[in-house]
Image (cartoon, rainbow, N blue to C red; front, side):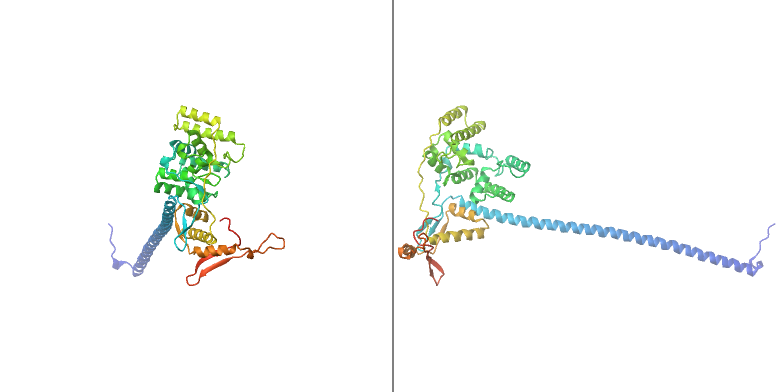
Length: 421
């Protein structure tokens, strides 16, 4: 049998060794648990830091995105404001110019002393008095989709851009609509640049929003250049055929529309050997009208015979007004043009066209009685002193001011009679 030994019977030295061993094992287990707990704590801390780092990166990206979107929004708002101002100014200017009347200058007493642009050969006519042949001829050869686009013919513009690129900027491919051509005529901007073209597109688009197609076409046909100092189809009809535009034949309408790309060259009165070219160009317009269904075959055949027989050109006389302004008015017009250009942020050519077409009234400080006397005095031979070569002469100028108001009442800029503006 197996006997159980009690604790009292075990020697004290053995018990001590056993307790020491249990104590060491207890410390070892404690250290092991501590180490495991510390490692887990460290891993947990690393995980938290990683998560915080990812959150911070996301926050930074979100902030950058918000800043970028805010900048884009601000730029769009600024662009919108600038386009709004541009549209408002263009509407004011174009609406005034569509009156198509010369501006006048009044003296101090309210008397008309000048009509600006009166030196141009320009007769206006309502679109109702223009023959349909003429309207169809211009639209057919210049802008066949005039009645369907909104100022910009996408198809022609795309073709013009492609031609410009493939020819390295040397293309002569025309992409301008009638509305764009009118914009160019109003603004006087003929610069060859991409920036000018973009502005022209914008203004043409706006013009189609302000006016009807009939109003745009009427204005265009009344301001286009058709010959030497000759503007508008009514003036052109008198200059080339000595008749009103409403009396033009189909062939004559086709001729007038055809010369738009080079009025001076197709002028029969300039002495060029261009009879054949005039016939070819006129027939080109007639063929385009026939292609688009604007005329019948019989109408084409009749007009073709007239062209082949030779158009009956007859130069008519067109009166112009007195364009010799006083020195005072000359200075005033130059000052007004400069002020307009600065105030409206437009070119001086644009400002000059504005005065030619807007029917504005300019109130001057000229005292006409005093101006007449000053100019009369400048004609006296006693002031003319010749140089040794007998050709050059003395000159003189005079300005009379109202010192209380600063108004210029009269002035001259030279001796002898003033000849032109």
